Image: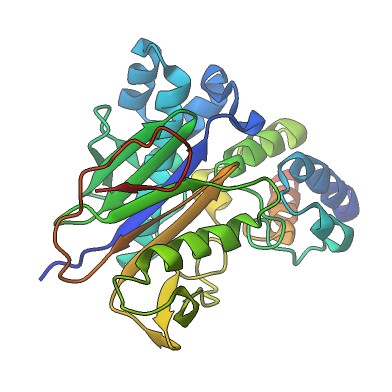
Length: 218
Length: 82
């Protein structure tokens, strides 16, 4: 049976560091392929599309890392279908879902099967973003694993070959690994995760919450 | 260019993108750019472009991919300039 693995990435369009990137030719050239650049040139929302591409590429990179030999981390090697439905890398096609809510873009890439559970939320500026992302994950999944959030923990092992020296996050219950693939992300005011739960029924379709509170995606 | 000069310039390039400014107080050649300095992965594109502009070199994707620590960046630049 094919492995069902997920990666996700969230982008804060309101982060000043992200502003104007679509107007910087070298940035776009470094990060995007020919079809993506053509789509950006024709887009009425090039900033939103550029960061949708980047979020998709980073989500796909996380999946590629889980699939085996560590890929080169170069955004332009991950090619996003301009319709934002798939990402191509190294001869493989990953499925893609992009949700845009206000200034938040949340991309989820996965290998096969039903879309992963995907949730994004706003956090306060004083929050430790990594900790907030892990908290969102464990509080969201505690019910699925019939335990309290305090019984769940997220760990990342040191992996010298990994691009950031750390392996993918793993979810533990009472200190033992669970059969669930998870991915965490954060940027600016937002944190997010994606999770492939074993044997889970299809999740509800993404819903767009009126406020920037945690929301559930399909 | 001396290694220390390259190191100082690399830190200056990284500084605007560092999300853990307290880590700059103890930054060294062994500091991890993403894990320790908390530079966002998308900002790595900006860092590579800044390095290219500052040092007048071209950085290939495969070389950029190998840069995990400040020291990796410094050594890449020194090697490219020699």
